[in-house]
Each structure stands twice: as structure tokens, then as C-alpha cells.
Image 1 (tube, helix red, strand yellow):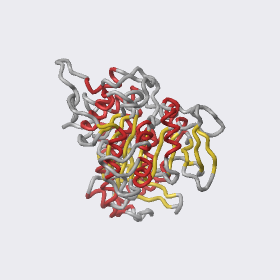
Image 2 (cartoon, one colour):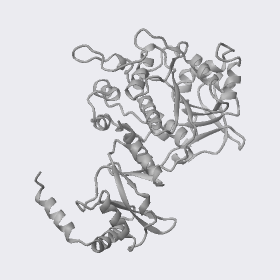
Image 3 (cartoon, rainbow, N blue to C red):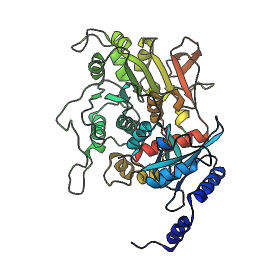
Image 4 (cartoon, rainbow, N blue to C red):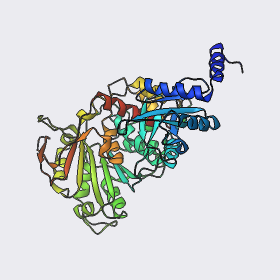
Length: 448
């Protein structure tokens, strides 16, 4: 294959350099890019795509002299080098890098962990993804109001990707928005992302007619031009979904004590019914006893805090259930709330979604954005509860002090500071945090 004149000149220029010359040039490049850089020695340009991971063999290379070792390793591997500045030690480190496709984050993270690296760098997104996380036995039940706002879809997508990375186990999905089509949409997602056997529960006695913001509940029944169903389902048209609170009881009964994390991003109807339930075939414990024994913490998308006394939509739409939930929930269960204001700046446009999913023609989220979503400024509220649950407080800009939360009959969430309290809430980040977090969600979306 012929190469362009510019590429020929670049290659010739590179071939004129000895490793000593390259070392000097790369050292100066580090001074030009104090936040870090990657360099392809074949083209002498910074890559615009790829996930960069450093090899352990070139760790602790922070002097001009050490660059000769880095270059020797890079020539024997992928001819990729990089640099980054450690402000704590005041040293600029250089490495030989391995590149993974942008859609292979799980593989890049695994390689990074094997090589003792703290991060994976995405050239296309310009963000670092943490790789030196502790591997916890994190068991999650995802509780959502699927079928209205699309952030539920992206939060669920994030959970599948975290499972790909072996960062959590998704025990089940509870759909607290009534009507079968909403559970069928989850069934499609389970199958599309390679987890067809994750059980799904459906609320049947919850909010009668909640507001529908984006009507994508019939996504599961989409067909092609020849009337064939586009998306595979496990349950299908003839199968049945267990009641949401019953699935909670079934799943919780099988888990070790204090081992389950709930991520609740919709109404708390099924959780409320769980707390009010009695002994059954799954457990001799009543709902409060079962929750107290098995659940460790709950991450909730909802709440309005600070000086505002506005009501919260998720709690107000199911106010009787919500009041019962706050009344009966055992006080030793940790709660972290994700208010809407934290996710407000994270606007994932329809144009961006479709572009990020351009790697395939048939995709449930892409189909929704192509045919059902007029760009309604959908914000990524729900994924923040998922990210916090999986990655911990360090993934958030700031978590409030401890306290107790009281829900009023009109839906306000009142926070009373107390070091012994069981509740905390996320606070908004700056523009840089919001931009980086949205890029992270987008990076997760392109994985396949």
C-alpha cells in the first residue's frame, strides 16, 4: 500500500533520529505537555484514539537517561511511549505503552492491573480511567422505573459494563413502573448485553399513571421492514415476571448477611412493598427483618437538599409508598442520595448517543434515539447512583456529612446533620468533573 508524502517525510524524519536524539525530543515534549502525552514513534504524532496502558517493565522511568530504556522497550513492542507528571513527587514519568481499541476497556483494565498501573488513558476522550481499584464482592439489585427517562437505560448499561470488568454482580432487576412492556425492555437489554439470565421483577401495585417523559416502553416490540422482531428476549411473550417485591425476597434470602447493595433510581414502590411483606416460601422473616439482615446499603437517585424545599419527583409520584419506605427502613442501613442537580450538567445529546453507537446498526438504545427521542435534553442522573455504588465516594466530587433524612407528606427531603446518621448525599461537581464523568459514561457506551 502506498503511503502519503507527508507520512513518508514523517517516517524519514523519524529514521534520522538516534535513540539519544529521540530521548531528548521526548524529554522536551514532557515539558510542553505537563498533564501528559502519548507518542507514536512510527508517525511521531500523538494518537487520537486508543486506550493506552503502560508496561510494568518501564515503571519508575523519570529521568532523561531512563528514556533510553523506555525507547528500547517500545521499539521491541508497539513503538508507543507516553509521559505523565506526578505532582505529589514532582517527577515526570515516561513509559512504553500498549494500545487497546477504544471499545476494549475491560481488556485494557485487566492488562493495567496485571502490570500494576493505576490508570488507563483514553486518547479519544482525553480521560484517565482508574484501574487500581479493590476487587470487592459487590452484589447489586437494580431498581428502576424503566420505560420513561432514558437515563435508566444508561445506568443499566453501566452495570453490564462493570460486570464485564468483574467489578460487581447484578443479582436482578426490579422494574417499579407498572406494565409488562417496561420489564420486556429490560429483558431486551439483558439479552443484548450478554446477560440473558438476570432475573427481572415487575411492580403490579404501584403508581397507577406516572408521567412518561420519553415513551420508549414499546422498544421490545420493534420490528424490521419484514416484520421480524429486532431484539431477542428470554422471557418472551408467554413467560411471566415475578412481582418486584417477591423477586426481592427470593434474591435476598439466598445472599449472605449484609452483602447486598440496592441501586434505586425510580420509585420506591417495590422496596416499600418488600418492607411491608410477611414470611413466605423464600424466607421465614418479614420484610423489615429480611432487609435488615441482608441489605448493606442503598444508593438512591432522588432528594432535594440545601436551602431548597422543593419536592422530589420520584418520592412524590408514589408518596404513600415513599412515606412507608422511610418509616420502615431499618436505621442501620447506609443510604447515599444522588440529587438531580448533580446530574443536571451531564447532558448526553441524541446526536452524541447515535454517534457513539455507530459501531452497530441494531442497538436498543440507538433505536430509541433514532425513532422515539426528539432531543429532549436527557440528563444522565441515574448513572451517578450506579457509579457511586460501584466506584465509591472517591468517584464523586463531594459527599455530604452524615445525617438523617425525613420525607414530608408533600415530598420534601429534610436533612438533619448528625454524625450517627445513616444518610448522606452527593453534591454537584465543577464543570471539569461533569465533563469528565459524561465522557466516562460515553466511553462505557461504545464498549462491545
